[in-house]
Image (cartoon, rainbow, N blue to C red; front, side, top):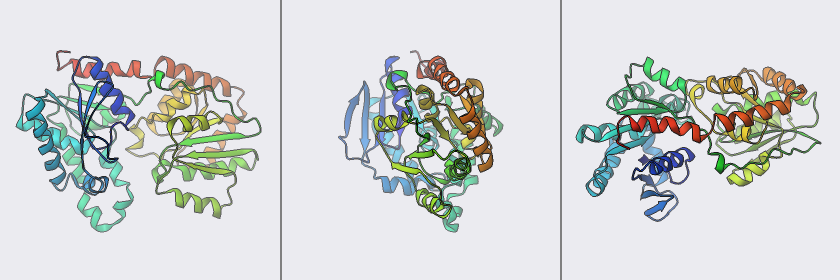
Length: 387
């Protein structure tokens, strides 16, 4: 596996690697080493080989991988060195920039099987990044070229893994022909999340959000909607666990609009985040609709389900579909603070709030969990491997 991030860090990669190890595969992950860990390690049967590629260099080269060949050359050289030592059968590339490496390795070594594991719609994601406001960077990064390279780098893949049905549909519409698809949602391993049922403070109605704080996460809409609802429910409060470049703008907005009872907790360890979540009433996922967010599978929705917390989400396609299927909460128009407030009030007034929480818990117990989801990963591998 190729991962241009620390390991362990990405929950999705850990689940996939450990699942493949349990299937009988020898799994090696070539990962970056941002935190000065030992070069070689074995974690739960998965072999880790870490590269001393600095996070600064990675972040600078990453957006230009479709334009400049340096990123691909660096990783390809490391993979070939690894191949000469271990002679592996499969190269599994996590996210689009590293699919360039899979594409090149497949050309050089046709017998190697190549899996493209797309965590997100990368071309659309970078289109919304703050660095794209710079005219020079915008020309150099070239989003249109990223879409062209996406088609090129995926065309010789032996399997493509995506996080949501809409991602598969988009790639098929772009002319990517593939018979071996796997829709591997970002569900949770139930054994990892023995989350207690929420026990909120009865003196408050607490909204809870966890994750990055960027403009496309939509917290600005949620906070405006919250302030509208707070005119009716004075005991409302909003807890935000996480951090990001957009936090400063949100704080300015909160001050200018005099929005009360908003707490920024900063980044917390997962156990601490869950303890805060368990004192909340309603889980919020306010992502703005886009080609990217419509087809991502945020695992926080399944954390909320596990804690039996009713959920209020924006109308991004995937989120809306999960809420409708599970009956675990409500959704609102992503651009409308008024609709956020209306749906929040309806959720507060609903006598079925506990029913929403119960429905979410049942959904994650019966469907949206890794025991079920991993079957898709196994299916993709079984089509081209012997194990």
